[in-house]
Image (cartoon, rainbow, N blue to C red; front, side, top):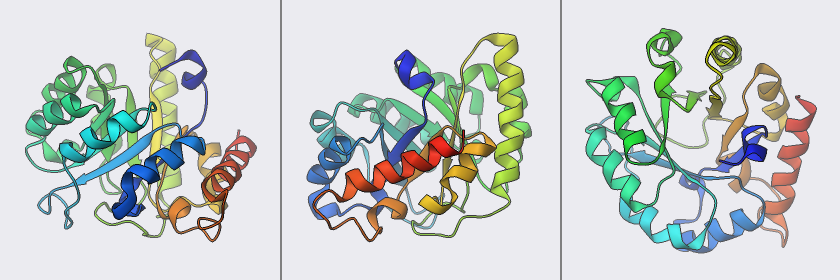
Length: 237
């Protein structure tokens, strides 16, 4: 992560909402349009009620893009998948505290495999988990919907949760001089992006807000949508 990126607002399209028949072309187009990273929603139909994709898909698109690949594991048996996705070219991997018996061990495993480590907090997951693992994470992913499916409506209470986490990050960063990014995923649209930025989020996972946007089918669709989001995020500074 460059110094420029450390101090910027990141936008990462979630390929859960992409056209799987043309996934390679989709990720290339998103990178050209200005995506800062590509987000993978990995689901196993056990931890969440849906089934998506595994490390082989990550490995297939890795040569097509140079931006980071951000893997969100919504699965059981995360430790094996951490190793497999790191080997497949992931740069960032996040896990839910409910998905592992030893959260600290799993976070250390992510870092030891050369990736940035993140913790994911569902709408009902308390932020007190953060009190014990801040030194072991590079980012926090706040779910503003219940995980499992794309296209869900944003949960309004997530804004207060983001504000509270931002306060924790700022206090920790002043003491330890360690940068921790605050990522949000779920129901993010152009209409609420500025508000989320004002709450303290700096990294935004966007699925249907990009892929289901009315401009998606136009010649410059992804670029135009991405620029609209960036304008909103700047206004939320």
